[in-house]
Each structure stands twice: as structure tokens, then as C-alpha cells.
Length: 115
Image (cartoon, rainbow, N blue to C red):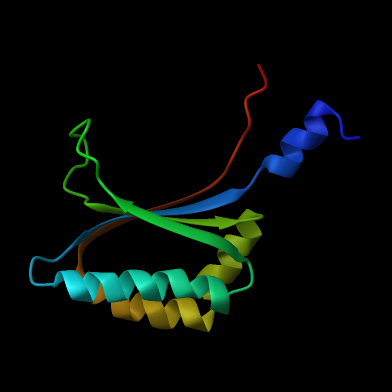
């Protein structure tokens, strides 16, 4: 049986977060296709464990114009580095980038707070 520290270490994951705003001339159908392409990277890049996305719920009004969030999960930050360098990610990024008005990316290793 793992101790509390061992359990916390096992639960830590690395996250790759993208905040995005699509250009006005990008249709809803194009956005959906781009999101499907992003989600499919899970099937093409082994270090990528999961993908989730959503749009701003409009509660805090602090989005600075970003409308979409994309969250990818990895076991380690090294997995994120492998993902970023992977040919499938590069090819996808070359499709996504021209559709974006602005983008912000952040990678982090999650931490668990022991109370």
C-alpha cells in the first residue's frame, strides 16, 4: 500500500493548456473540424493521454478575448516535449495556427496539496 506521498506522486500529471480565439472568418464547422483534429492527436502521439476542450462559460469576464480552452494530459513534462516535437503535432499546428487570432500556451506539472 502506498503512503500519502506515494499516492500524491502517482496522481501528478503534466498539462498542456491552450487558450485560443479563432478569427472571425473561421466558420463553426471549420472550428469543429479543427477540434476533432486536435482530439485525434491522442491516437497519433503516444505520450498524449487525454484531450478535453471547452468554451468560456462567461462567469468571471476575465478572458481577455480568448474563447476556447484546450487541455491535453501527459504523464510528465518530458511527454509534452515529445508531443511538441512530434510530426503529427507539427502538421496539426500548421493547420490550426492560421485559423487563430490569438493564442496562449502553458505547460505545467500538477501538484497536489496535502491538507
